[in-house]
Image 1: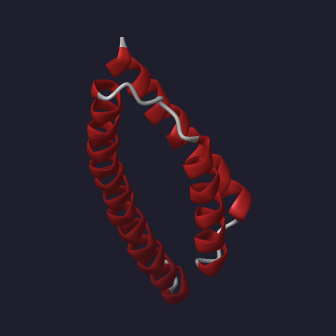
Image 2: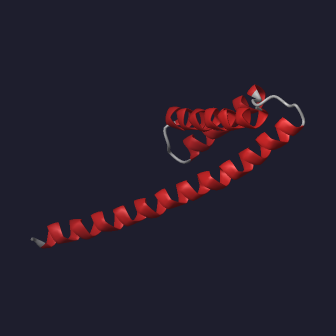
Image 3: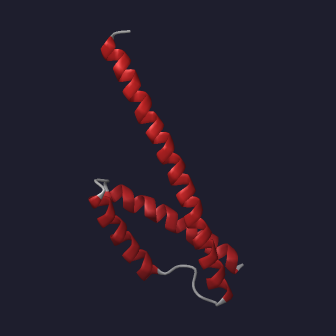
Length: 98
């Protein structure tokens, strides 16, 4: 293996280690987020509040798109990601209302 190939392999390993750490952060962050949204769902169910809040969801999507632009992340991807999470949260909230 040439020096350049060995260096490339080392840099690749470092990138992969960073990706693995970031994946763990994402998973734990989502877990923490869902703990809060489940508490919200329970609170809504106990108080006969609707499982979704379209006005808040709209604000959150706009906020996430702005954050995505600041983070140099495709805003459409960020929007699709948040929409996926919101739909999952609403599904959980509806479960609490059953």
